[in-house]
Image 1 (spheres, rainbow, N blue to C red):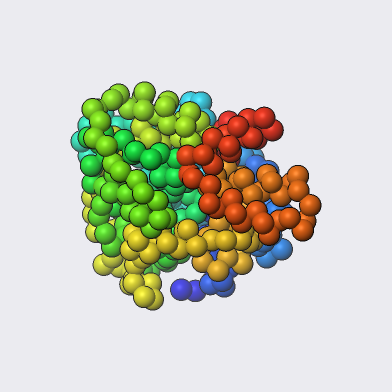
Image 2: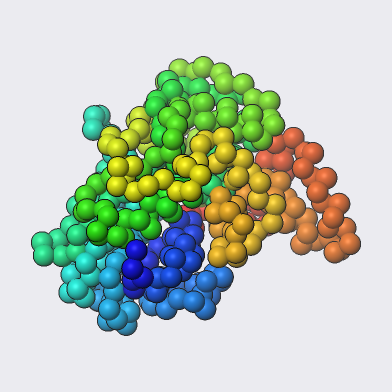
Length: 381
């Protein structure tokens, strides 16, 4: 693919930060847009990109950002307000602002990463919003739009994976309501990046909607048990009656250290099968070297991260970056970090013994310490 000038919105997020690193490695010129430009300096790729201020909720800010950015071939739209109040309306307005400004700037393509949208049933706010954003990005005479839909993304730091991690770590008996047996097509973060980069190529990928997935179909319940097995935890699934998903989402927000609104919005979406509705890009884009990453391998890679590194220097994109959310990485990692703050340096090697603490106990300790230190997550990062 010919090197292009690419603008990435949502560059400080989990996928966005790794996408910037991938685009730079492929020789593209990258502009990164954020409402918090000073935050961009925390990322290892900062010296290799052009930063611009962009508040997608403000049409004037968006237009100004495209002026400052100069000529742009492709825009990656990775902005979302999930976890925030009234995010659905705000997301639609933000997408429309970016699409109109991109049209005026002569951008030829917008690549949008959203979620699967089941064809039947009353959708959750999260799933409905994903489809509406794709529509808002499509304006007459504007850039063509490639919408990639993905279900659960497996990788340390991904909100979906962190929810999986905390449930698997903290619950000895894992509740299995009927929806835990819905079909699920997860995908590894490395394969998401592979397809995102390919989607910028207009000669290879026509405009349209594509569901991207890994090589295996599973269920959410089986995915939880796979995580437990691979992390060497003895866990048992226990059948439980169906419960209103709004109640489940509220309970989940109380028991996992993921920002409450973010956790509850995502959990509500589990009431639907999350399987691909089309063949995605498999007929247009060759698989990456070595093939697509299977579920077990993706989980193992996500658990293999021992040291947080700058996102552009990760040994593998599944590993935890130093700019991923503070609440990510598991309870043991959090306890080690907190202990390191209050212990002498020569004691730090001993902190590895915290790995022997049972998952539920580590969760209680971590929650207590985070609450005392006012570090418990309250909103999406």
